[in-house]
Amino acid sequence: MLIIKNLYVKIKNNLIIKKLNLKINKGEIHILMGPNGSGKSSLSYTITRKVNYNIYKGKIKFNNKLINKLNTYEVSKLGIFLSFQYPIEIYGITMFNFLKNLFKKNKNKYIKYIFKLCNKLDINKKYLNRYFNYGFSGGEKKKNEILQMLILKPKFSILDEIDSGLDIDSLKIIFNNIKYYIKKKKDSSFLIITHNTNIINYIKPNFIHILYNGKIIKTGNLHLLNKINKYGYKNIINF
Image (cartoon, rainbow, N blue to C red):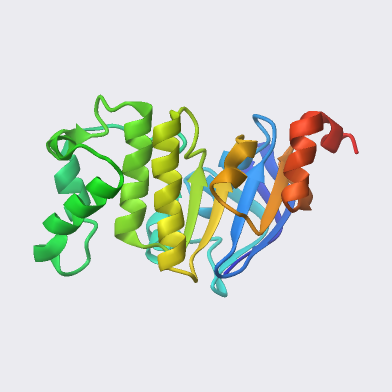
């Protein structure tokens, strides 16, 4: 589904991604970890073609289509979704008006469907009349990100620290809904960026990658998480 080959990315004159290779097949869940400032969010912005994240060298293909020169809108139309580490607030647009415009068809049925998803995510329906994310807590914003994912039904989802800053109840709700989506849409794929080594209590990944200094330096399975828990990143980076 997603193939990244020999990727180099620059912001202005700063090289932030270096010789990065990654392959994610349909139905796979990949976890991306690494110290702060390693380039994890930068990789997500590059895949979704954020402005100023310039591909200096290499290729990104999604379902055999080269996306290097596409813009963010074109990439999203292909079925790529990104949940933000720090979801933005939009003053003047209500949650309800924003969400209803995500529906491509059957707009007359969207109200009941939005209510159904709000119940699954334990989102207070009163929030639908508030401005988008405006004044929401961190947990409420993260639930809203998953709500959008469930509505859009993407082929490939990048979840950037969707679990950060959540209490235990919100954490369970978030990951139960991710598991629900994985079960319902078996050919969808995920790249989950996290610092939480306990994520395996909620999600069973196919691969775990360690990103450091803009490059994937280690790929493994659940045993790699045990090493991180025991030794931290330093031991792996110096290996």
